[in-house]
Amino acid sequence: MAVKIRLARRGRKKAAQFDIVVADARAPRDGRFIEKLGTYDPNTNPASINFDGDKAFDWIMKGAQPTDTVRAMLSYRGVLYRKHLQLGVIKGAISQETADQRYNEWMEQKNAKIEDKRTSLGTAQAEKRQAQLAAETKVREARAEAIRQRQAAAAAAAAPAAEATESTEAAAETTEEAGA
Image 1 (tube, rainbow, N blue to C red):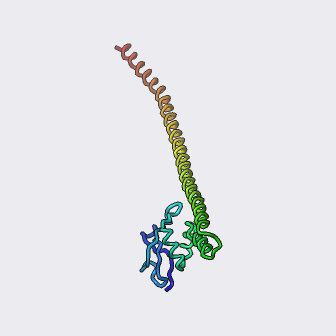
Image 2 (spheres, rainbow, N blue to C red):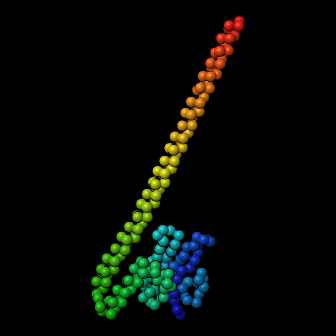
Image 3 (cartoon, one colour):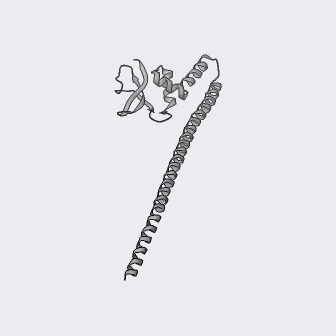
């Protein structure tokens, strides 16, 4: 029986999420599986990959074949590197302590890279948001200044008209007083 480590789709249309499962190669994609190892969500940035690395390592060592996508995920999370080191231990090329030390150093570096990417994405989004707010503030201030100028122009235009109306009314009053 050929055993594969592959993705099983779930989630709604155009918002796919996947389960990372160990299944018989003859089983349908979303059908029966032997064991669920974790989840994969490609809709986030960076993509969320959550699975039990120890279980995946055990299945890889037992001979389960990952699909191309799952192989990339296992490589990204260090399961394949751990397998490589373990094969060296089995052959006697290195000791188990050396293999564990190399794997832990690699994991620390990888986790640091992943965290740097997350923080850089977060700061980039924050900077983009600040730039948008600054642009909106600039536009709002320009509109407010244009409204003030229109109001001042309307007030200036209304002032001579009001003076003319007042002078006309004053002249009419003086003629009424003179006529009376």
